[in-house]
Image 1 (tube, helix red, strand yellow):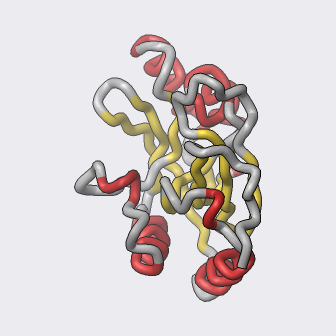
Image 2 (cartoon, one colour):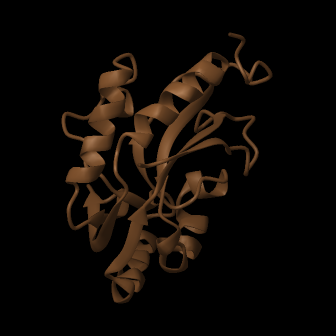
Length: 187
C-alpha cells in the first residue's frame, strides 16, 4: 500500500499520544510558554510511544492495525495528582496510577519493536504530562507552583491519537506544524 504522507519531508516524525483535554485549563498557558511541543500544535498529553514510525511509512494498513490494537484495550479513568521533575529541567504532572499508561506503551512497543519508547534512551519510562522544559528553572518552578491548586485533575482515557510533524530542533520548523492524522478509540 502506498504511504499516506508522501509529502512529508525527511526528518519528520510521528507520535502516539493520549490527549488530556481536562488538563488544558490548568497547564495550557504554561505549556504555551515553556513547552516547544505546545508551540508546535501538540495538545496536553501523556505519551504512549515516541518516536513512532516515519510518516512516509504510515499507510492505511498500518492505521487499520493500530485501530484494532487500541480497540482491544479498555478506556479508563485516571487522576493527575502530583507535580514531578526530571532533574531541574523538565516539570510534569503525573498520574496517581501509571500502570494503565505503561501497559499501553508496552502493548504498542511489543507490536512495533523497532520503535522503543523515547528511542531507548531511558531505562525506565515514566508516564507524565510535560508542562515545560524551556524558559529556565525559575519559570518552571513558578509554573509548578501555580498548577498545584488545580490538582487533582480527573480525566478519562478514551482515545490515542497519531500525530506527525518535524523533528524538534529542526531550524526550518515553524510553530504549529504537528498535526493529528488519526484517532483510535479505546475499547
